[in-house]
Amino acid sequence: INPATGDVLGIFPLSTQEEVLVAVNCAKGAFTEWKSKSRLERAEILNNVATLVEQRKVSLATAISKETGKNYNESIAEVNEALHMAQFAFGSGRTPTGDIVSSELAEKDSYMVRKPKGVIAIVTPFNFPLAIGMFWNAAPALVEGNTVVVKPSEDAPWSTHAAMEIYHEAGLPAGVINVVHGDGKAGDALIRKDVDHICFTGSAEVGQHIRKVAAESWHKTTSCEMGSKSACIVFEDSNPDLVVEACIASAFKLSGQRCVSSGRMIVQRSIVDQFAETFVERAK
Image 1: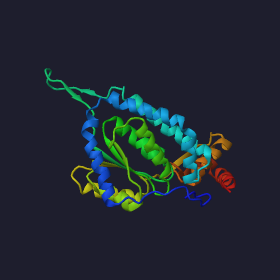
Image 2: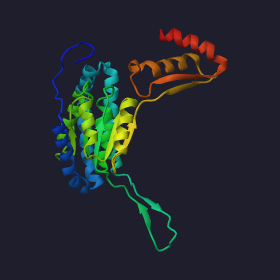
Image 3: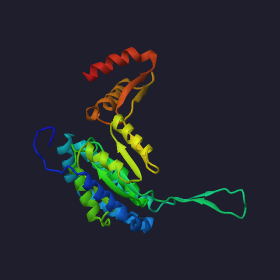
Image 4: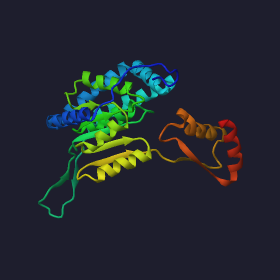
């Protein structure tokens, strides 16, 4: 539903436990063949993805604006972020990743190489529905040889679905990236299945729950991004007009619904009264 107008945009499923299991099994089944491909070969597909994202900027941004209520320029910015991550993932396929490690034995060579972890579960929020799950998380995971199951927010599933179509058209083999839809029950089902790593962006409460579930397993790891109490630090030699505008934008852009929105202003004592007065006036 478009939160700005109340219009119905589309119908998406509430994936069942069985459907979540099918998605995870598809990812597990595709893992061996996918990881056996070279990083260069995997990266080339991400180049195809980037090309398609660039061609569909307008339709992707339109979907984001309609399903989240963002204004269009914010949505275009998000599509650009997704594009840049796809390009970065492509480029990283041609970047050396190993490290030579000094050995105490002259005759012994020691080195470290990256190996894919396995099936990556990605659970994403509503505020950046395209960029976070399908690109910031999925693109690097795919280039490194992992397979993926994404569960987007039930409030903004459309752009994720559009991104899935792009990955499919770009030539990603069946089962390498999968999507399940639904609410927290689908997300909980996903993190409890036989996945190897969980990427989560959202509330602190859910993130703590995910970390507990992972801790009870023998092998699951997590990366949970649960917002912040970011601060703007303001010194007396700063430009007063510029710094207030910057702090306003940091606090209230996207209605404050960003994980990096500043919740605090740390201001030098010599200017704190004037800053507070100006900030409050502008914020009104």
